[in-house]
Amino acid sequence: MTWGWTGVRGTWATPEAESSLQRLSEVGGVNWLTVAFAALQETAHSTHIAFRDEPTVTDDELRWTIRRAREHGWQVCLKPTVNCADGTWRAFIGFFDQDVPGEPSWTQWFTSYREFILHYARIAQDEGCDMLCVGCEMVQADRQESHWRALIAEVRQVYGGLVTYNCDKYQEDRLTWWDAVDVITSSGYYPAGTWPEHLDRIERTVERWNKPFFFMEAGCPSRSGSAARPNDWSLPGEPSGVEQERYYREMFDECAKRPWMLGFMLWDWPARLYDAADAARDDDYCVYGKAAQTVVGAHYTAVAERAAFSGHP
Image (cartoon, rainbow, N blue to C red):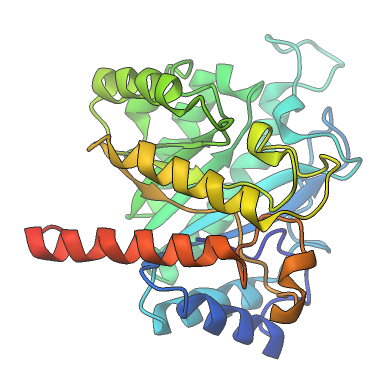
Protein backbone atom coordinates (compact mmCIF):
# COMPACT_ATOMS: atom_id res chain seq x y z
CA MET A 1 0.00 0.00 0.00
CA THR A 2 1.06 3.59 -0.61
CA TRP A 3 0.70 5.68 2.54
CA GLY A 4 0.79 9.32 3.48
CA TRP A 5 0.38 11.20 0.21
CA THR A 6 0.90 14.07 -0.24
CA GLY A 7 3.14 14.29 2.79
CA VAL A 8 1.89 17.59 4.17
CA ARG A 9 3.87 18.87 7.14
CA GLY A 10 2.05 18.37 10.40
CA THR A 11 -0.11 15.44 9.25
CA TRP A 12 2.41 12.69 10.07
CA ALA A 13 3.62 11.66 13.56
CA THR A 14 0.17 12.45 14.97
CA PRO A 15 -2.52 10.39 16.71
CA GLU A 16 -4.48 10.46 13.41
CA ALA A 17 -1.51 9.09 11.50
CA GLU A 18 -1.00 6.41 14.16
CA SER A 19 -4.65 5.42 13.81
CA SER A 20 -4.35 5.35 10.00
CA LEU A 21 -1.43 2.92 10.18
CA GLN A 22 -3.32 0.75 12.66
CA ARG A 23 -6.38 0.61 10.39
CA LEU A 24 -4.12 -0.35 7.49
CA SER A 25 -2.61 -3.20 9.50
CA GLU A 26 -6.12 -4.65 9.78
CA VAL A 27 -6.62 -4.99 6.01
CA GLY A 28 -4.82 -8.33 5.85
CA GLY A 29 -1.93 -9.46 3.67
CA VAL A 30 -0.21 -6.06 3.36
CA ASN A 31 3.54 -6.60 3.73
CA TRP A 32 5.07 -3.51 2.05
CA LEU A 33 4.46 0.17 2.66
CA THR A 34 5.49 2.87 0.20
CA VAL A 35 5.98 6.05 2.21
CA ALA A 36 5.15 8.72 -0.37
CA PHE A 37 5.59 12.46 0.02
CA ALA A 38 6.14 15.50 -2.17
CA ALA A 39 8.39 18.52 -2.34
CA LEU A 40 7.57 21.53 -4.49
CA GLN A 41 9.14 23.52 -7.28
CA GLU A 42 7.29 26.63 -8.37
CA THR A 43 6.49 25.74 -12.01
CA ALA A 44 7.31 23.06 -14.56
CA HIS A 45 10.25 25.22 -15.70
CA SER A 46 11.72 25.99 -12.28
CA THR A 47 15.08 24.52 -11.34
CA HIS A 48 14.90 24.69 -7.54
CA ILE A 49 13.16 22.02 -5.42
CA ALA A 50 12.34 23.42 -1.98
CA PHE A 51 12.29 20.11 -0.14
CA ARG A 52 13.32 21.59 3.21
CA ASP A 53 10.38 23.99 3.26
CA GLU A 54 6.69 23.63 3.99
CA PRO A 55 4.51 21.88 3.05
CA THR A 56 6.91 18.90 2.80
CA VAL A 57 6.98 16.66 5.87
CA THR A 58 9.95 17.09 8.16
CA ASP A 59 12.74 14.53 8.43
CA ASP A 60 11.53 13.73 11.95
CA GLU A 61 8.02 13.00 10.65
CA LEU A 62 9.51 10.80 7.95
CA ARG A 63 11.66 8.84 10.38
CA TRP A 64 8.66 8.40 12.70
CA THR A 65 6.63 6.90 9.86
CA ILE A 66 9.35 4.50 8.76
CA ARG A 67 9.82 3.28 12.31
CA ARG A 68 6.09 2.81 12.86
CA ALA A 69 5.88 0.86 9.60
CA ARG A 70 8.67 -1.39 10.85
CA GLU A 71 6.76 -1.96 14.10
CA HIS A 72 3.82 -3.20 12.02
CA GLY A 73 6.12 -5.67 10.29
CA TRP A 74 6.09 -4.02 6.88
CA GLN A 75 8.98 -3.65 4.50
CA VAL A 76 9.39 -0.02 3.46
CA CYS A 77 9.88 1.73 0.15
CA LEU A 78 10.73 5.42 0.44
CA LYS A 79 9.26 7.51 -2.37
CA PRO A 80 10.27 11.20 -2.44
CA THR A 81 8.41 12.94 -5.26
CA VAL A 82 8.50 16.39 -6.80
CA ASN A 83 5.36 18.38 -7.63
CA CYS A 84 4.75 21.82 -9.12
CA ALA A 85 3.27 24.44 -6.80
CA ASP A 86 1.14 25.84 -9.62
CA GLY A 87 -0.62 22.50 -10.09
CA THR A 88 1.14 21.40 -13.29
CA TRP A 89 1.62 17.63 -13.32
CA ARG A 90 5.26 16.62 -12.79
CA ALA A 91 5.24 14.72 -16.10
CA PHE A 92 5.44 18.13 -17.81
CA ILE A 93 8.56 19.32 -16.01
CA GLY A 94 10.87 20.03 -18.91
CA PHE A 95 13.60 22.12 -20.52
CA PHE A 96 15.44 22.32 -23.86
CA ASP A 97 17.01 18.99 -24.81
CA GLN A 98 20.45 20.61 -24.73
CA ASP A 99 21.50 23.28 -22.25
CA VAL A 100 21.30 26.82 -23.62
CA PRO A 101 23.04 29.78 -21.94
CA GLY A 102 20.61 32.06 -20.16
CA GLU A 103 17.75 29.52 -20.12
CA PRO A 104 16.74 27.10 -17.36
CA SER A 105 18.28 23.72 -18.11
CA TRP A 106 18.16 20.05 -17.31
CA THR A 107 21.61 20.34 -15.76
CA GLN A 108 20.39 22.99 -13.33
CA TRP A 109 17.26 21.00 -12.50
CA PHE A 110 19.11 17.73 -11.94
CA THR A 111 21.58 19.56 -9.68
CA SER A 112 18.69 20.44 -7.36
CA TYR A 113 16.98 17.08 -7.86
CA ARG A 114 20.23 15.30 -6.98
CA GLU A 115 20.41 17.17 -3.65
CA PHE A 116 16.77 16.28 -3.01
CA ILE A 117 17.09 12.56 -3.75
CA LEU A 118 20.45 12.08 -2.04
CA HIS A 119 19.09 13.70 1.13
CA TYR A 120 16.36 11.08 1.34
CA ALA A 121 18.63 8.27 0.16
CA ARG A 122 20.73 8.90 3.27
CA ILE A 123 17.63 8.76 5.46
CA ALA A 124 16.58 5.54 3.72
CA GLN A 125 19.98 4.08 4.53
CA ASP A 126 19.93 5.30 8.14
CA GLU A 127 16.46 3.86 8.74
CA GLY A 128 17.04 0.60 6.89
CA CYS A 129 14.46 1.10 4.15
CA ASP A 130 14.26 -1.88 1.82
CA MET A 131 13.72 0.12 -1.36
CA LEU A 132 14.12 3.66 -2.66
CA CYS A 133 12.12 5.06 -5.55
CA VAL A 134 14.24 7.75 -7.22
CA GLY A 135 11.50 9.32 -9.35
CA CYS A 136 7.82 9.17 -10.23
CA GLU A 137 6.08 9.78 -13.56
CA MET A 138 8.70 12.20 -14.89
CA VAL A 139 7.74 11.62 -18.51
CA GLN A 140 9.65 14.55 -20.04
CA ALA A 141 12.67 13.87 -17.85
CA ASP A 142 12.70 10.16 -18.79
CA ARG A 143 14.64 11.02 -21.95
CA GLN A 144 17.55 12.44 -19.91
CA GLU A 145 19.28 9.08 -19.70
CA SER A 146 22.76 10.30 -18.80
CA HIS A 147 21.43 12.42 -15.93
CA TRP A 148 19.44 9.50 -14.50
CA ARG A 149 22.36 7.11 -14.77
CA ALA A 150 24.66 9.56 -12.98
CA LEU A 151 22.08 10.19 -10.26
CA ILE A 152 21.46 6.49 -9.63
CA ALA A 153 25.21 5.83 -9.46
CA GLU A 154 25.49 8.50 -6.74
CA VAL A 155 22.48 7.10 -4.89
CA ARG A 156 24.18 3.72 -4.72
CA GLN A 157 27.17 5.32 -3.01
CA VAL A 158 25.02 6.28 0.00
CA TYR A 159 22.17 3.74 -0.09
CA GLY A 160 22.54 -0.04 -0.16
CA GLY A 161 18.95 -1.20 -0.69
CA LEU A 162 16.93 -1.84 -3.82
CA VAL A 163 16.57 1.08 -6.23
CA THR A 164 13.61 1.57 -8.53
CA TYR A 165 12.01 4.23 -10.73
CA ASN A 166 8.23 4.64 -11.11
CA CYS A 167 7.49 5.40 -14.76
CA ASP A 168 4.07 6.59 -15.82
CA LYS A 169 1.42 4.38 -17.41
CA TYR A 170 2.12 3.49 -21.07
CA GLN A 171 5.83 4.31 -20.60
CA GLU A 172 7.19 0.94 -19.48
CA ASP A 173 8.56 0.07 -22.92
CA ARG A 174 9.94 3.55 -23.62
CA LEU A 175 12.65 3.95 -20.99
CA THR A 176 16.18 3.19 -22.18
CA TRP A 177 17.90 2.92 -18.81
CA TRP A 178 16.04 0.20 -16.91
CA ASP A 179 19.33 -1.65 -16.50
CA ALA A 180 20.43 1.06 -14.04
CA VAL A 181 17.78 0.11 -11.45
CA ASP A 182 17.06 -3.13 -9.62
CA VAL A 183 13.31 -3.26 -10.17
CA ILE A 184 11.04 -1.95 -12.93
CA THR A 185 7.90 -0.24 -11.62
CA SER A 186 5.11 1.81 -13.14
CA SER A 187 1.78 3.47 -12.46
CA GLY A 188 -0.71 0.88 -13.65
CA TYR A 189 -3.81 3.00 -14.08
CA TYR A 190 -5.15 1.06 -17.05
CA PRO A 191 -8.81 1.25 -18.05
CA ALA A 192 -11.07 -1.67 -17.27
CA GLY A 193 -11.20 -4.09 -20.19
CA THR A 194 -7.68 -3.27 -21.42
CA TRP A 195 -5.49 -5.13 -18.94
CA PRO A 196 -4.44 -8.03 -21.22
CA GLU A 197 -3.03 -5.80 -23.95
CA HIS A 198 -1.03 -3.69 -21.51
CA LEU A 199 0.26 -6.68 -19.59
CA ASP A 200 1.37 -8.21 -22.91
CA ARG A 201 3.35 -5.05 -23.65
CA ILE A 202 4.85 -4.86 -20.17
CA GLU A 203 5.78 -8.53 -20.35
CA ARG A 204 7.95 -7.86 -23.37
CA THR A 205 9.74 -5.12 -21.42
CA VAL A 206 10.29 -7.41 -18.44
CA GLU A 207 11.74 -10.07 -20.73
CA ARG A 208 13.96 -7.58 -22.54
CA TRP A 209 15.55 -6.17 -19.39
CA ASN A 210 15.33 -9.32 -17.25
CA LYS A 211 14.24 -7.35 -14.21
CA PRO A 212 11.59 -7.89 -11.52
CA PHE A 213 8.39 -5.87 -11.97
CA PHE A 214 5.52 -4.59 -9.86
CA PHE A 215 3.06 -1.69 -10.01
CA MET A 216 4.37 1.11 -7.82
CA GLU A 217 0.94 2.70 -8.19
CA ALA A 218 -2.40 1.19 -9.15
CA GLY A 219 -5.99 1.68 -8.15
CA CYS A 220 -9.32 3.26 -9.00
CA PRO A 221 -11.46 5.89 -7.28
CA SER A 222 -14.79 4.75 -5.87
CA ARG A 223 -16.62 6.91 -8.37
CA SER A 224 -18.95 6.30 -11.28
CA GLY A 225 -16.99 6.31 -14.55
CA SER A 226 -13.58 5.90 -12.93
CA ALA A 227 -13.00 2.35 -14.13
CA ALA A 228 -12.61 3.77 -17.64
CA ARG A 229 -10.26 6.54 -16.44
CA PRO A 230 -8.68 5.31 -13.22
CA ASN A 231 -5.85 7.86 -13.33
CA ASP A 232 -8.27 10.83 -13.28
CA TRP A 233 -8.83 11.83 -9.66
CA SER A 234 -10.96 14.82 -10.76
CA LEU A 235 -13.42 12.93 -12.97
CA PRO A 236 -17.01 14.00 -12.22
CA GLY A 237 -19.27 11.24 -10.97
CA GLU A 238 -21.23 9.90 -8.06
CA PRO A 239 -19.58 7.80 -5.34
CA SER A 240 -19.59 4.13 -6.37
CA GLY A 241 -18.01 1.48 -4.23
CA VAL A 242 -19.33 -1.11 -6.67
CA GLU A 243 -17.34 0.35 -9.56
CA GLN A 244 -14.16 0.38 -7.50
CA GLU A 245 -14.72 -3.18 -6.29
CA ARG A 246 -15.24 -4.49 -9.83
CA TYR A 247 -12.12 -2.73 -11.04
CA TYR A 248 -9.99 -4.32 -8.33
CA ARG A 249 -11.38 -7.77 -9.05
CA GLU A 250 -10.54 -7.44 -12.74
CA MET A 251 -7.08 -6.01 -12.10
CA PHE A 252 -6.15 -8.73 -9.62
CA ASP A 253 -7.58 -11.50 -11.80
CA GLU A 254 -5.72 -10.39 -14.93
CA CYS A 255 -2.42 -9.72 -13.16
CA ALA A 256 -2.57 -13.07 -11.37
CA LYS A 257 -2.24 -14.76 -14.77
CA ARG A 258 1.26 -13.27 -15.16
CA PRO A 259 3.87 -15.02 -13.00
CA TRP A 260 6.34 -12.16 -13.49
CA MET A 261 3.95 -9.63 -11.91
CA LEU A 262 5.13 -9.39 -8.31
CA GLY A 263 2.58 -7.11 -6.69
CA PHE A 264 1.16 -3.66 -6.07
CA MET A 265 1.75 -0.57 -3.98
CA LEU A 266 -1.91 0.38 -4.18
CA TRP A 267 -2.92 4.03 -4.32
CA ASP A 268 -3.51 5.09 -1.62
CA TRP A 269 -4.04 5.19 2.15
CA PRO A 270 -3.96 8.72 3.63
CA ALA A 271 -2.46 9.76 6.94
CA ARG A 272 -5.82 11.29 7.84
CA LEU A 273 -8.54 8.73 7.23
CA TYR A 274 -12.18 9.61 6.81
CA ASP A 275 -14.54 8.05 9.34
CA ALA A 276 -15.58 4.51 8.43
CA ALA A 277 -19.20 5.63 8.61
CA ASP A 278 -18.50 8.02 5.72
CA ALA A 279 -16.89 5.44 3.44
CA ALA A 280 -19.90 5.14 1.14
CA ARG A 281 -19.75 8.89 0.48
CA ASP A 282 -16.01 9.00 -0.15
CA ASP A 283 -15.22 8.89 -3.88
CA ASP A 284 -11.41 8.86 -3.73
CA TYR A 285 -8.89 6.02 -4.12
CA CYS A 286 -8.64 4.83 -0.52
CA VAL A 287 -10.44 1.50 0.02
CA TYR A 288 -10.89 1.91 3.78
CA GLY A 289 -14.36 0.75 4.83
CA LYS A 290 -15.39 0.03 1.24
CA ALA A 291 -16.16 -3.22 -0.57
CA ALA A 292 -12.79 -3.02 -2.31
CA GLN A 293 -11.02 -3.34 1.04
CA THR A 294 -12.36 -6.87 1.39
CA VAL A 295 -11.20 -7.67 -2.15
CA VAL A 296 -7.72 -6.31 -1.46
CA GLY A 297 -7.38 -8.15 1.85
CA ALA A 298 -8.56 -11.44 0.39
CA HIS A 299 -6.25 -11.19 -2.62
CA TYR A 300 -3.19 -10.21 -0.60
CA THR A 301 -3.81 -12.90 2.01
CA ALA A 302 -4.22 -15.57 -0.65
CA VAL A 303 -0.98 -14.50 -2.35
CA ALA A 304 0.87 -14.59 0.97
CA GLU A 305 -0.48 -18.06 1.75
CA ARG A 306 0.57 -19.40 -1.65
CA ALA A 307 4.02 -17.90 -1.23
CA ALA A 308 4.40 -19.46 2.22
CA PHE A 309 3.25 -22.85 0.90
CA SER A 310 5.74 -22.71 -1.97
CA GLY A 311 8.57 -21.58 0.28
CA HIS A 312 9.07 -18.28 -1.56
CA PRO A 313 9.13 -14.86 0.19
